[in-house]
Image (cartoon, rainbow over all chains, first blue to last red; front, side, top):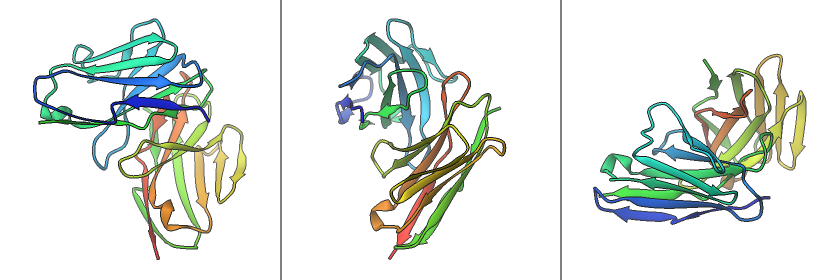
Length: 115
Length: 109
């Protein structure tokens, strides 16, 4: 199956700092990438959908100025958590799909801890 | 609104069979996915159904009835490593995945 990588896998930062998470599709071109957040013992929550070369579409309640998403190429999307606070501590997962009807392939996730 | 329902938690015995049900109400339907997620890890793909019927893949099978808005995931010959959450997700008319809350499956020896 297709491979999606995420970096870093784990990050611990101080409150107020910004954190960038990279999501790469390694062996296919991802026309669409998705960013999810998952709090402990809860389901995946879609944060935003990004298509290569266009602005991301954010889900209701997700602050676009706080969670900056850039999908600059068909193989790379980045999520930047700006001015992170302890309540932003979560498991962030990206996924990518090649075409509309294809399955989504998930990255391994990034565990963010904000102190 | 869009809704995916699946049981919160199920318990089964090693070596047995378990069926995890999923019912859905979505705006359009372009297929239903089952994913497995172990604690602290990202989901991994298990199956995809877009036509009615049963799809078998080794110990795992997935069934779909579009008229009933219903699917199930059947796990046979359960192993301890099958302890995980199982997520049902439907691809709606906009090709967005609508996720269920997941079913936590506990396997006992």
